[in-house]
Image (cartoon, rainbow, N blue to C red):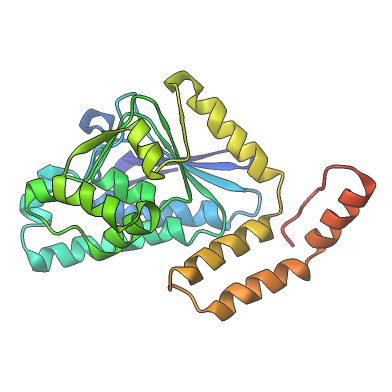
Length: 261
């Protein structure tokens, strides 16, 4: 499916829903209509019970996402009032990823700058190629890095490292991103597809309700959901057919077959 005039594309491969930022001629810079369209792109994939994992990536071979599209700043983000509209779109877009009931993987290759850090920080798992570059250039532009975006970055790398990246606006390589904990794995570019398959295959073999409960608990720990919602998700796992199947498969020494119920 195409969204935002084809600048966001989705497709399904087996149990994986792919979301591709598709503006390679501008290094996948994100326009306002792309932020506004992302929830529409995510929703059908997140709601499809046959899909176990979402993967977010960028088109072309140079960038995951190079940032927001600067060409729009003079018309769409020129003062505080217009920025609120822009920020509402970004917040809804990142929430669609963070709140999806299944794992979301950011498969990063090349530039992951500004909006790229925003999108990938809303994903659950981030992996990258060894030639990837990361940065938060807000201070070089004079704009305020939005509250939700900074809160997510702090939750991933800690307040000191987050302030380092924001205050200096410096770029870091894949090895430093790994040391900071922003990414989980770094591989050669040729090995990224196999690494993503490794993750998606492992996730597809596991219990969807257990993974959804972990996402719910994570949001509760971050203060975005009541603890009672997290406990309800945990209780749902113990009352599920999948829990019975997991115990039975363990006893029978076979691989479990989970249904998500």
